[in-house]
Image (cartoon, rainbow, N blue to C red):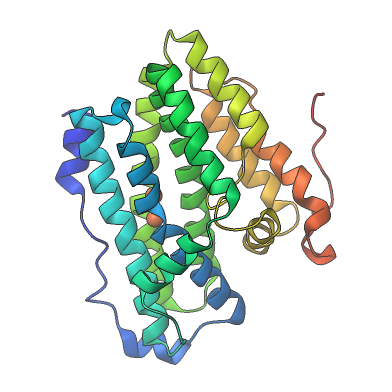
Length: 279
Ligand SMILES: [Fe+2]
Ligand SMILES: [Fe+2]
């Protein structure tokens, strides 16, 4: 079965109707969890805008790509919806998923708009390489997202939240696999695409949501989720997976980002040792 056929066969909105909301309420959420879930719901709700931006470009009018993007967007939408529902069920005051999404977008910073513009320019000048870049970037972000949900699932004392996060993480891992395999096919033998991916990752890598949250907000969330040296373990793990892609050996963009944001973090979440990076 092709990758897209496999994806289509298993794609579904994350199941939440069978969750035990009474048990979820009984266990409640910590303050940090409320903050993180709110952040995740915001980021997830923005997927539709990435989808809209890329689908405007002529290069994305490939039927297989459009099929994947549609399924992907659908699943991500329900991540935001499921998290928002969970928060409501445990008594956290939250706005409806759609209202939140609109507000977050309205506050989209210049950076997000600039990214959309750059994306259009690259797509016009290098249509083939642009899709490779989009897949490569997607793989990077989906793998971090998978780690983020798994980490929060491991840490929570709420068994119902644990279950929900595990279900979401499973879908994120499937998104990662699609982006990753697709990136590998597109990077194979395309030296220009490889060079562009490396350069853009080196210059612009930041965890997903960078356009709608400030660097400091993004950094603080990542540091709360992966405190101290854990952030370098996770970033190192992501990079090692990327090294197996054509032309990506030794890529250290994620570790560089984690090192760069250390001074923005509260002292107690900073790493004790920062990996030594080549110049
Ligand atoms: Fe998601
Ligand atoms: Fe995802």
